[in-house]
Amino acid sequence: MTHDPLTETTFAERAREQLAKPFLRTAVPRATDHAANDLRARFADHDYEGLRARGADIRSATIADLQTHLDRLVAAFAANGVQVHMAADAAQARAHIRRICRDAGARRVVKVKSMATEEIELNPALIADGLTVTETDLGEYVVQLDNDRPSHIIAPIIHKTREEVRQSLSRVAGRELPDDASELTGFARETLRDAFMDADVGISGANFGVAESGTVVLVTNEGNGRMSTSMPRVHISLMGIERVLPRLDDLAVMLPLLTGAGTGQLITTYVTMISGPRGTNEPDGPEQMHVVLLDNGRRALLGTEYQDVLHCIRCGACQNVCPVYRQVGGHAYGWVYGGPIGAVLTPLFRGQQDGGELPQASSLCGACDDICPVKIPLHDLLLRLRRQRVDEGAAPFKERLVASVWAWAWSSAWRYRIVSGVASRLMQIGWVSRVLARRGPLAGWALGRSVPMPARRPFHRRRSDD
Image 1 (cartoon, one colour):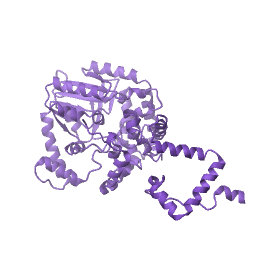
Image 2: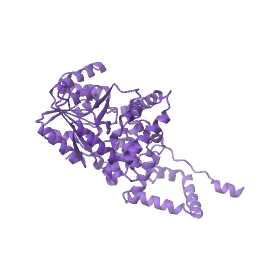
Image 3: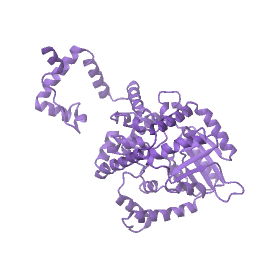
């Protein structure tokens, strides 16, 4: 059985573990600050708000009529010689990919960075079939070597030091590699070149799928995307059903938004557009191309108050500005997606019992709303999930009890004045305030801040006395 930290630990436990790592406390804020600043610089001389509005309109209109665009996409794929497989859930997606690999007689697989393959836990299933699986994105490769998981949608090893990376690659080399970034990347490049040459199957995700032309679009900076999708004789693309775009022209809006919000670049080093297997007279490309269209909870969100989350283009910008994510990193969220988008997607995909606590891990500052390139109202979605958690009875008993008592006490003026008066008197007593801060109901809140001392004369008494 796969180890699942989401069901075995709480967010508070995972957060404490991450907060105990001094490097993470400095590296994650430094990296996310850099990414957020690059985004602002990228669009400094452009109408970013206008571009965001256009991107939001494209995503909203597409998701509102998703089935129509999916039907067009499937038809276009078929016309291009692409074999399409529908997967209702993670198990079906894994089964499709395993069968394709078996039919191809595959022994070795190379993969491009894909959060969707992380979502369906693909690698363990392929390894259980006896396949050699190699992640070819440098960060994902290191994560795989360490039996770890990505900490950020765009930057998988944002949580690792260069020394940790050196040690991981040294284990593969069988010798101590130098503490030099160019040497380390050079060794990884040489190792991965052999994997590309020997692979029978290449597996990728899909940043977008264009319904008009039946095209899978990938954006990468390392060239591994093109190597993985063109050199093996079979290419499999795993694509979430919400990643469809109606027209090629839509890429003129969505690609700048994705690359700008994700890495601050004008455009990524490689934009790869794949419309099918190689033709009869073409020397390059796969002999077969398969697309697995993944539902896994997405379709259930259509027509609900959470439909807007399907607009997400997985740029990671909301993680870069979230004050909670910036302190604890992605591993504290326990599943594939971290930060504000993870706090929304996880309870929607996994259920309130598994991920319902994550919307609480938010200051509700709204920074994620302000930076999202397609204007997803993440702040509102987090509040709705908090309400749903209470409505479904998934909130802890103590939390519900305290909230009920608080609501009763503060729902009338006279009860409010009695309770606040008693609390104020108690807080004036030094030892009482210390006990409440360390062991009482305010202990969790007071852990990282000083408990404020109430005024001796509350505001409403000052008004009446005057």
